[in-house]
Length: 285
Image (tube, rainbow, N blue to C red; front, top):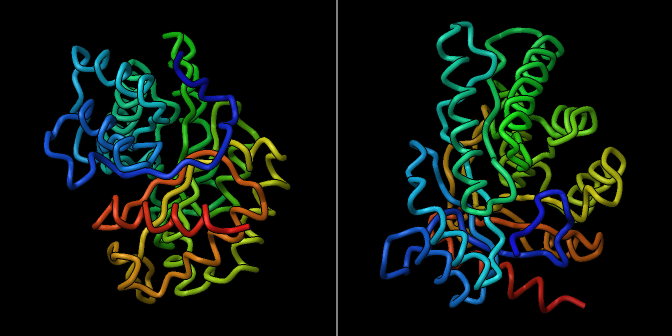
């Protein structure tokens, strides 16, 4: 039986952004099975440069996920801007989200993660309403196609990008079928080094609970990595040990708030840091 995207998971699951680096066979189905061999239990299919899974491969991926009890998600292409000033780019952005949702649903995926928009030097409130309207249109298309999958706009790493925590929590509270992807590394970079203590992590989780209730905490999708940043925010991902990110305090906060769902590691050494965080988390009492 596949996992219901609206049903909270039984625990916090750790996994990789894409096929683990050490996986000897570079297919998505083999990657899913290999995630289980590593002792991890979720995987995000990376469509960031294009939807690279074909329909004929979806059945094998779904079978591997079910047999290995792996929660599957996907990341839609990077080339998305629902606030573009060019109509053709908006159309292409919507298509990329829909294509990602379609193939992910065939694979048994729970959610589609994407960077929703850029502000384009427009007022934030206006951009919010534009993104909201276009997400409503996408949700309507998915409903028409009988596709039940969660849309997860991601907290972004730069101030020029739509997607601060407040915006995404508000959007998630307003639209059924939308929940945030909370990228803690992006929040750390976006605030130029803040959001890196137990109290700050707790404030993030408290905001999620206030906006979405306990069910918000029980059905989270999160990204984590070390990160390099400057005054304008995110520069690039780093291995955790090479960064200043305080992952141990984050694991403590996730444990204390009984957060459930999926935590996907985006460090350059995806499975190593995923297992590092998992080991620390499971050792907490």
